[in-house]
Length: 337
Length: 278
Image (cartoon, rainbow over all chains, first blue to last red; front, side, top):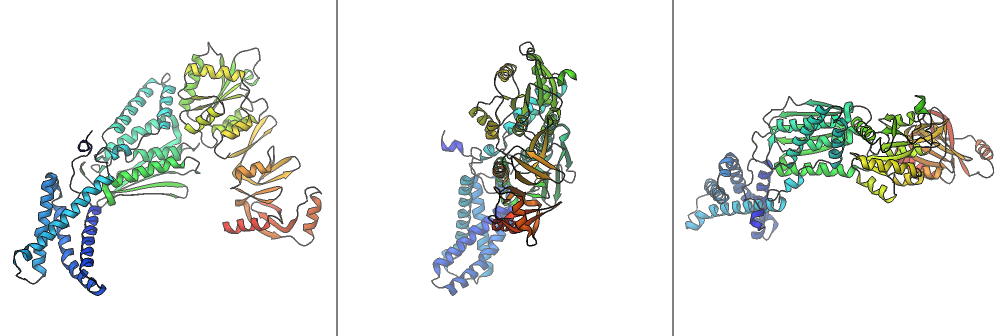
């Protein structure tokens, strides 16, 4: 297989993402810093120059970021080269405008006139190259599927126990067994699907309900589930299999080790343009099985990062014997990134 | 009822079976397969339990030949249950069942302990039952080797039944002559285990304050000084052989009006451990 086949076509970064914006600002300011460092042998002139350059660069940068985020969907419709050209041109035009606006007009010929445009264009290209390299390094994801590899796997423990439970009811309650096998089909279909696009929250919730229903078959009354998701818009899009592995964790660590009924609570609400999801379950004394837990949680953290960069947050904590998993993701209404 | 309580007749090939699993469908699955193979290995289902504690309670009244124990159960796992069962007089043969547990399975293979993978297959079940009939029960030493987690309970055999003492209830463990006494808020229990052994397993929870005494760290409320003269009389009481130099400090305990002497040798360590926790 050639390398070309392995990688997906390169794409422009998501200009609406705060993390991406932050990175653009960091890279450009880094360039400014280097330029000032090269030109100034002593500290005081270096600082003065840095401030002077910043006075020109920051307005340019902010204007560019605003325009890019406004035009994000249009830019993404272009081919990568087209997008690159568009981004470069916008940057050079803005740079020229800002330069004209803030500095006294010096007539130094064509080079002087074109210099800001060239600098804007080159900075844009450097930033885009940075993002290209970063997406390659960070995510063979969109290449072969770091995401696919990361997509939470159902624990073999769950698979074999569920199959055993189905066999346990197959003679006494064939209908229940049928239902369980259907649920299992759906669950595995979802697991084996191409999980690189966001899915509606309602789909994820439906999948989780099926999963929990399967668990209820074997755990009976010990598994108590409370859904509190009415505060969340139904058209929100979330990474596929974002909740199911967390619920599997909750069942494995919170419900199975308890001989008494144990409650798993899933709550989701929308605050501004953020979706906040929390899953809680009773925490039990940790035994030797804690490494698997970290793997599942790290896995989700990395997938959220691949989908949303710095805009997603994932935290876990134990408060008064209750384990909390807490997710914050931007409110997206479309399945594409 | 009378049938099930009587120990099975050695001439009767019917095996009396107890099933312990926290998942109801898993228990019913095993029962179904047992009926399926009744022609090959006649069995009689004498009871089932969803937890280890329930199983031990049941074992006071029934005498199964074979007990199927699920490994992963809440509160008390199958391995701990097997250890408590092995303390019974004439314990049943134990067959472990598991749906998926790589570590346990590796350990079983290593120690030639029989186990069944769930879903259980009829032929595999026949083989396991036949083997259980022939082979001696798993020894306590092997069970101890298999256990990877600390026990949550100690067990004692009292008038034919197994009593469980939750580790969390034990305030102190004291070695006296042949036995070790476990003291809870309510009463004393005589254990058939050595203090050293208990210290190895539960060293995190208990601190040794004397050659013959382990105290639950959480139960220590403070230290008090004995009036002069008391300490020496204490030494005399404990007999010539067991004399250990004692400080005149004693440990005071929450919920128990007893003062335990701290040995001179361990005093600094005990004090450091206690002040470190506060």
